Length: 600
Image (cartoon, rainbow, N blue to C red; front, side):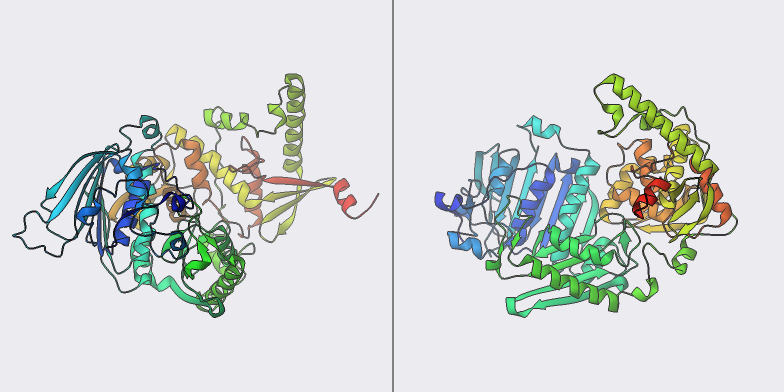
């Protein structure tokens, strides 16, 4: 291992310094990167109280030389760079020399290490240990650490900064932050073993595997058969990219299965994400995101990782050209290998196959007519709340009241007009068209269904009487480590919603019952769990997430179902916005249409 040196002031001034330890995940990131930079092939991470009480990491890397132990907790002490030109040829994850200094300033640190090849049992004091608390060196002495590598224990994080400790979230949230941080590094290093435990319970246990595709399938609990590999090479710029992405069978309601790596470093790139998601939008249902992992290899001189203390952001030369090449290669691979023929015209105009798989368009209504309890506190609160720019929120009380009365009159008028309007037809299986004497009313059938389901779920959950559908054969849901963590902290909350579930193993739960209102319970349950911390959600937030899976755009409704939808919507307490704030109904007046045709 290269010697640790204190960086000179002129070099420090060129570094985007100022590393801030915000939460346990911040500590783990620095320690994990140090282990990987040390060439470790086995990394163990053990946590107590989501890392607040203990973070214990152990690796079999090259260890730390005895002479360097007194330096490593000093600021800007590093073995990875020594001069300004090194900033343009960085090939390690860390380089600033701030990690251990920042960690030791807010915790109790015990570090044991052995850089010697002599690990014979007879050598009882082969290693060294150093104890630092709040930046104060307490002791440094030989210890019995009879293996090459390093072991670090971080205890009582933020013991001397109670203000920062106060802002830590629940254990469920902090563990999910750690998993979000930990998983990308396991994807990068398929040839290494990773173990992560919390309170003695194993969360991740990954053995070395042959390739990255296998590692992605293992850690994200995906079917390897639905993963596709592709490459993109810009030979004139000496840039290459490997892409592993899911076919149309892998989609989520969040971007939690999307990863970008540049020169072996997990990064965030809005540009790359934007281009790839634009391709996925062509083949996935609305509001769904695909899975992808992009591994870019760029000459170090063409990127700058020294623009932010967290090193999550990088500056890439010719980024737009790289994005265009990635998009083209991604689109070609998706179209040729991704089974897109199965989903021809999938999107706003959903195919018959998808409709049949998702909906029953027989005589049975798609939606249950909810019995809305208008006295519901949550619903009344929702109705009272208005956008910040609403007239109701104007400071002048007189004009506020006048505006409110006019607004309510307009709503009542729209309610009556929709009730008496004649059905005309459907546009692209998305909008229902109704005719009045002097206008056309358009209902967004998906937004309307969300409102109906939302209010019904709110009422049922408040009364503790959620109607459930029992399954003779439970359906299994494969979960990511983050989702398993969310389920373990929130199974009672899910049961309150109508989801009765049991854990099968560390990757799978079985759903035994689900709310009868829902039409896609599997997607709904996974969407709720993907949100993370559920123990603090109220009924309204839970219902808002659940109703997203109540119906999808693209269903071809029969006449009876259209009448049922309109009547159910009119029975809602707040019929003209969906739970997410979008309108359910818009009106095109004769006057407006005449102006569009330049009629006077």
